[in-house]
Image (cartoon, rainbow over all chains, first blue to last red; front, side, top):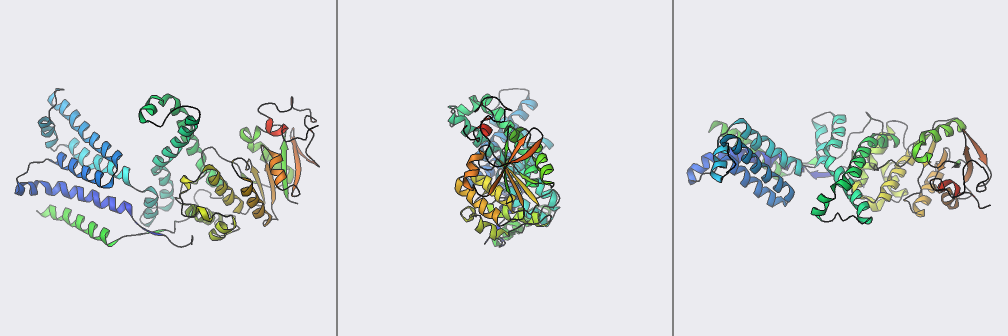
Length: 241
Length: 203
């Protein structure tokens, strides 16, 4: 029955809870490590946390991006602060252990943002946001949020066209070498899709500004409620400890 | 009979100047046309995830403006879309995405509709479903303009009246013009204009 309201668990809420737990883990790590006599700074805690999540979610692209970002940031920061390219792990720990604004930004803003962007459900987010924000804004927000999916779909079409014409794009290495061949049509396809989406909706009789409210609702599971409450309480509790 | 098949000397207009064709139709019929044409790389509003969400979304939007003939469930049933329910629109093949768009377009209420290039990528069976559905909306004037006009004509030969677009006007013709008889284009079967000339009767 398609008119029936569809209920599904909010994946985005789970992602939010996991991010809150990351903040809680960083907040409590110093206290905990005193008791277990372990020395890990926030940068290492972040690496451990994201590795565990990346493996648990089997999202290898996220894991690679997150680790690359953390290590690249630490390397650049160390080179700038120590004025040397002879990097060692203790030097990385020393520079990332100083909780300066750049370290805060990479750990507590960029890291969670990477996790969010690799795992969130754009369609779910647009269903959930109308409850707290403007409906029209969220409908258009989806077009921006689903850019990754748009890119993958267009890349699949362009690469399929090139493969039947004898250009091998199946292997990753080949793809990089063939970038000059597939990038122009891919860019053209993306620009055309973005330009024509509005015309398509108009053609079907969906004028802008008259987009209906999505009828689907999101279910919050008991586990999510408990997780959210626990994460918030842990963060609030850290303020008083 | 409200279905018309528009033949043209310059079939490239379907890609390059579709608006000019539609304007001529509007002038000929004296009414505004709602136009369907395949847009490059777009077969999805982008505001929904699954087929049923897309259908519900578009129909709800149509009802807030000119109106829609069928509700979401009826549309799925009458357009034979039930195998697609539950699937993501982005994961459908190009032909099915196009058919879904045509179904949603045909479902909107409009005094006249113009279908440009609907036959490409669609099986004959899908075209027959389209004709069946259009028959239930008999009050509308419907104009088709196709690269392969003969193909669509043969699917419902008794339903179409033929129109010929020539220069700046549209005239009614009784049968497919004889190839090369108009004298407005070069030799028969010229590359780039094959759609038109291949549709003409052999002389």
